[in-house]
Amino acid sequence: MAVFYDLRLMSLAVLMLASQLDVASASVRVYGLHARDLTGDAAGNKPDPYVRVWCSSVDGGKTIYMKDTAHPTWSEEFYFQDCKENEKLTLEVWDKDVTYDDKLGTCNINVQYGSHSITCFLNKGTMLYSYEVK
Image (cartoon, rainbow, N blue to C red; front, side):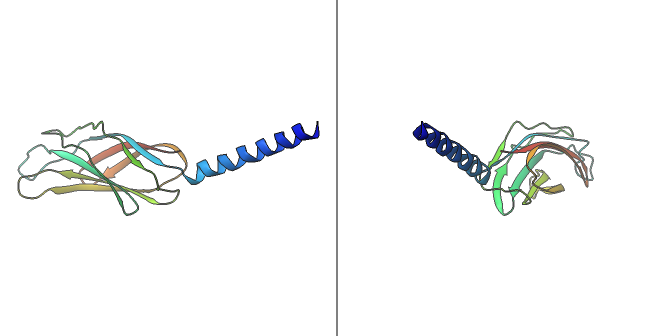
């Protein structure tokens, strides 16, 4: 009987360690990106917006650009395996142009555990997105 008791204790210890390892290897997923009321250039042209995403200094990439829209929705998701709690998550919204791209604004938050929906007020519109830490 003592063998089974020791085996149960060992199983419990292994499960507890595994749960701690899962937290240590937490990752961040950024998804549900959309914006509204983005403004284009001074000539009144509609923007061709896209978003760049970072966690700390790790560049997660960028979305495709959406042609001639002030209210874009992007389907891309971004994953950061080594982004931890309290590290800075940065999203930059840009307007694609022929000569050089114009920055419409930046969103910065410190990553927190759980699932979050964020509204970020830009210089030229509003950015909305969600992220979760697993």
